[in-house]
Image 1 (tube, one colour):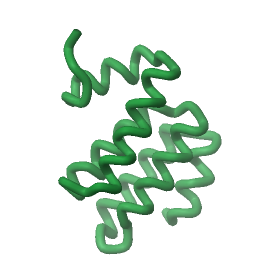
Image 2 (tube, helix red, strand yellow):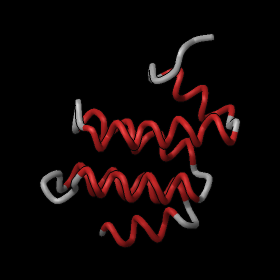
Image 3 (cartoon, helix red, strand yellow):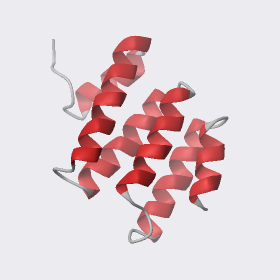
Image 4 (spheres, helix red, strand yellow):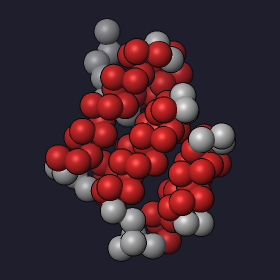
Length: 102
């Protein structure tokens, strides 16, 4: 898979985009940058694939701990999750420890 293919998939098939991008990031970690994570997460969020965006974000945060770029991505995903009030997304964020257990 290529980054372009992952972006195209994100526009119509969130689960396939997540799978393809995470496979690409695993197979070729030196070719996938923080910017690539940002692009794919952005596409997923824009097309309401919030749960898939959370999975990609989480992988990026683990790959680039302490990264300011990944922090911005996390804020983008948190905002989208609360804006859309996606129950599955909010549960996933809680399960991963990104939001409180209120």
